[in-house]
Structures are given as structure tokens and as C-alpha cells.
View 1 (cartoon, one colour):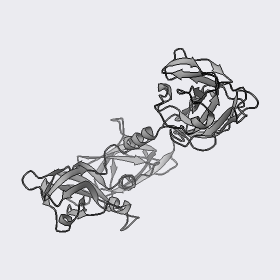
View 2 (cartoon, rainbow, N blue to C red):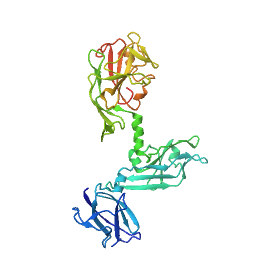
View 3 (spheres, rainbow, N blue to C red):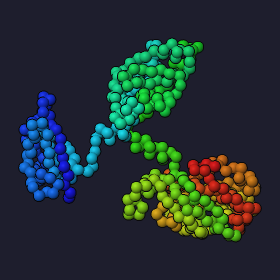
View 4 (cartoon, one colour):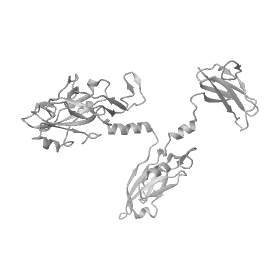
Length: 398
């Protein structure tokens, strides 16, 4: 383990320098005094406890790691060597202006032109004044009742915010991106001038709690999607498909690529397939999993959960799903159409419409990458009189 230097100035509780004071150094998870040295060679041991100099400064070399420092009945947890971490700097870098607790808006029961704001705690992060030394202001204000100001009594919608001093701001416009970084947004009210009362109140804060989970909420709501590539095309004069290579975004699916931990946890690279190995799905979960095929089945559609022959030359819309699976043979599934159409044009006009029920296995796990509009009698997916393949949008609609 390499050695690293540590030096710091220490103060007593009364504010005076801790001059010529014993400092004991313990490894983080031990009650045994740490081995200290005078320099990085480790050739000369240094006594432990160390004695600070006349300016309250203690200096020593030790193995890189975390330690407890005990001086004058006080304890400090410190890191020696990598990482060189300024905890305030690191915390401000990931902090945002946001509401921590409270701040609920409600129309005052006795005076309907006033709004009750519950006790509020939040933070205002100022990166603008000095980007090198950002400031973090804690805002804590008691419960209060605030009347609509003169301007708010002449408009319908009023937005409510707090500044870094806790003062209430009322304005007509929805807060801008810059304002959300400068003020704690509380929400909005709707005023009816005829009734002379606030008729709606809605708390709409930026929440400080659980930012990582808030991002996961958004990712899961959007669902997996193809980033680029992953284009489905006919394989030839047959019922097979080709797929181009491309990345798929699916939350956390690529945290491990097989047994290997990655630094790109949400993006999985999927290879080209010629032809595609696919599984045929209906709306109903199937156990065991259906076998892999290299062709689609245009002759069948999903009639309310029952696989049923397509009538004559009718058309259906089959959907192509891409899973970010480690096994290439498990990456593509084609789900049967659920409605018959008299021709390809009628089917094309209904892309994304109707009450299509997706297989539960695709929800949150697969990206929709294409539509296969195909006649029940098709034998050649490259023949546009028999089949038309459409690429889907990034999300699960045309």
C-alpha cells in the first residue's frame, strides 16, 4: 500500500490553536494506533501520538486510507491520500435549488384571496455569483398565510416561489429554467375574479429528496428505446428479417455485461442479425418460452388472446420488439397482430391506433423498433404488395 502525506491545522473548542497538543491516529476500523512515518520512503517511523507544532499543525505520512484523528477529546474522520476530496465542493456539485419538506399550498379557509403555505425547508444553490465557490443557502420559514398581491388580483394564474431569504415571490409566468435554479418553486394558484376567490391550488415543487429515484421514475415512464440503428428490413424473397446493429437504452440492463461491470449501465449494444432469430409472441404470457424461429408467421393473428387464422388476404400489424438480452437469440420478438384489415393501406392508416395489448414481458424490458404490415397470404416480405415494414419512433407509438 503506498504512503501518502497528511497535514492540517487543529483548533481547540475555544477557538485557539491546538499548539503542542498530542494527536492520536487510528485506522478507520481499528482501535490500534496507526503506523506513521516521517516521509514517503517509510524508512523512518514517526511516533503516534504526533505532537502539533506551535501553529497547531500536525504532519505525518501513512498508508492511503481513512483514519480517525483524536485530539483534545475531539475526533475527526479523514482520508489520507486518494481520493483528494473536498466534501463541501463535492456536495455543492450535486446539489440543486429545491424543496426539502413542506411548502404545501392551500386556499385559506377564511380569506379565499389568500394562500396558506405550510412550514417550508429548502435549499437555494448559487452557482452564478461565483462558479468557483458556489454557495448553498438553507431556507427555513414557518407556516404563513399570504394574500394575493395587487397584480395577482388582476390575473388568473399566479406562480409562487421563495427566494434565498425566505421571501415569497408571486408572478404570472411559469418559472423559467434560470428561476428554478435561483428560487424555490412552490406551485401555482388559479384566481376567479368574478367569485373573488382562489379556486385552485397546486403544489408543483422541484423535489430535493431521492434525485436518483426521480430520474429512474422518468426512465421507467419513457421505457426502453432504440438510440440509433436497429433497422428491420426484409431478408429476401422469404418470410425472414434482417436487423442492423445498434444501441438500445434500457435502464440498468447493461450494468453488467455478462459478469463484467460496465461504465455504461443503461446502453446495450446489439449486433446485426442476418437473418434475425426471433420468438413469436401473443398478448398472453407463454411458459415455457416459445421456441426461436427465423421467420414470422403472417397466417395467424391474436384474436383476444387466441391465435386464429387470418381470413383470406386480410392484413395484420405485427410488432417487432428488441430486448437488451445478453443472448443474441433472445433479443428479438415479433408479436402477432390483434386486428384484421382488408388491405395494407387500411392497416398502415391504423398504426399506433386501437386497443393493442402488448405482451407483459415487453413492458419495461423491450423497445419497439418496427411494424410489419403483412397480408395473411404473404410469402415474400420484400414484395410491397404483400408486406410493408415501418420503423417505429423512439417511444411506443408511430
